[in-house]
View 1: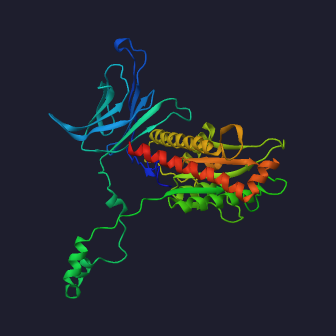
View 2: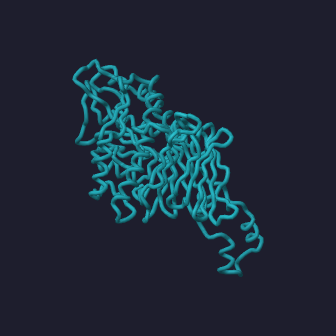
View 3: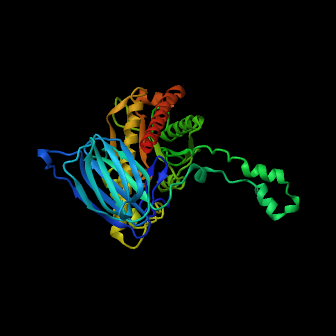
Length: 427
């Protein structure tokens, strides 16, 4: 994942997006004044564009959720050498026609109401395709829904070109070209007509971080140390996820060793992680306080990550697209915001699935600037599984069946999170 931010990058259901050198700052921002027929509000609030002549992102801000339907994918328009993308957003109102100048691959855009839907029309500067589109819900300080459309000059990759396994030895046809005398014609024909075996879907990569370890024991309870509790939980969760066959799981540590915080972030990014979960056990002066909490990155933490990137801290190792720092900062901000939104979605999903597995602390979703959450392109949460200083929580965290029940909740939340991703990607 260390190169994902070559320009603009983010994670959606394991899909990476890149905006390359020469990217322009965000352009084409249009606020909507609801003046048509006395309307006081509109479903479409704003349209934003950004990118370059190879990949361009269009963001339609909405005041309610929607389902998008692609009507036309960059087919030639009569009388115009450009091409158009036409997309309908169901049950979305438009307060009069909206239009504006484009950016990157988009020459101009318009939004109008058609048949009870908002019709988004993009006039393109050259042949291009819609690579992906998805809806982002409000979250992490963003109060609107955003329908995102990514347009690219690169042709969409088919499953055959992406997933076909590489042969372990040259095919018979190649052997025949090298040494015709030794080639069997029947075998050559069989090799030519034989279909390629279907490849297995790519596994989601989940990195599990067992907090503390080695010389850093973490918090202490009556009968256990935090470093031992987190390692046992990480192994349990790993085993549950691997058993499903849907995940590749990486542990930041699988023994009682000390791993620097920066290294834990580096491990997640090098693994091309789709999700990072750091497991911890809380502590407090009041032995009666108990319950789990989930942390996502705070605004101050995001600012700290920004500084680390532009100070070129080697542990974060982000490649930015060019010499224009202003553009780089905009692209990094967009990437971070997307990552934080996805982290918050997982945090809420996780708490929903933990509610019947363990006690939750009041205000159970919190934010902080923890080092392990700073990766700008990996959705990440830090989970305090309970209070080691509370006898009931300590018992649950050290008892095998109780620990498995808790990790069952985490595993089911991971399933739900990626299932939601797949649903959005299909829309």
